[in-house]
Length: 274
Ligand SMILES: Nc1ncnc2c1ncn2[C@@H]1O[C@H](COP(=O)(O)OP(=O)(O)OP(=O)(O)O)[C@@H](O)[C@H]1O
Image 1 (cartoon, rainbow, N blue to C red):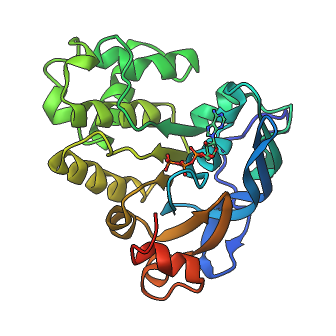
Image 2: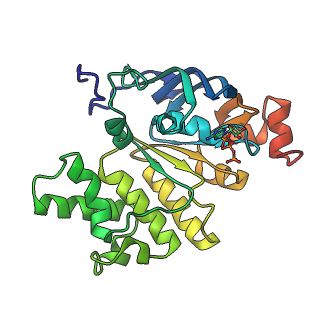
Image 3: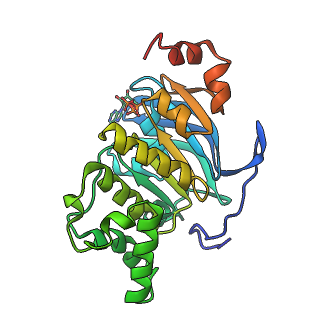
């Protein structure tokens, strides 16, 4: 672990999940409160996030899923009037500490948005940009390798290897989303946040992304916000149910969907509200 306030490369584990002793914790959030001006959007949420697995955040519209997700890589810092309280530990350091560089943090905790948002640059440059600004490539050959590896991991290489100089925006919606995932992977993240990554995609493109998420979880800690309970059930191993800014219940996805402990979770998953 490095001692200069930056987040080190080591995959140091911070503990185990209380209900899953074999899972190591990648991020540990304690007593998180989030305010937009005077209005409180997240109330005292504590959540441990397992490594090498997918955690789904579910709950009715406006319950705070995206707000909470954005706490995990300090994207809320970019929203005027938004204030985050509480502790989010990763590799033994609080990511909200002033010593943490948010740009570096966001390379370690990458993000994929609802709508694919490739840069207005070539496919190659979309991937190469991050490694270049973070100094991860020694030269052209090294960069070529990073680009190929990232596109392969995102399941896009075969489709684009002969047209790397074409604009990223020339790809289909599903391909663009895989390009954005490849872009996140290229800077060697440990965590990937996904905010409804399939909501702009058709069912076939959605299925490809879901398969990809299942593959990526072998290497990364993934947290996904989804409106679709079917998607949460298909792709995640753990599910956290939010309601009115509070975390109602978190657990093994099978348990949450088959025997929820809280009435509100049951009402939501059985379609009584939301
Ligand atoms: N930039 C903002 N400024 C003020 N209030 C906001 C802002 N973003 C979100 N909120 C409020 O915070 C609460 C939580 O919103 P958030 O978008 O996190 O919920 P969500 O569960 O992700 O919703 P959805 O499923 O509809 O995307 C809502 O009441 C919302 O109106």
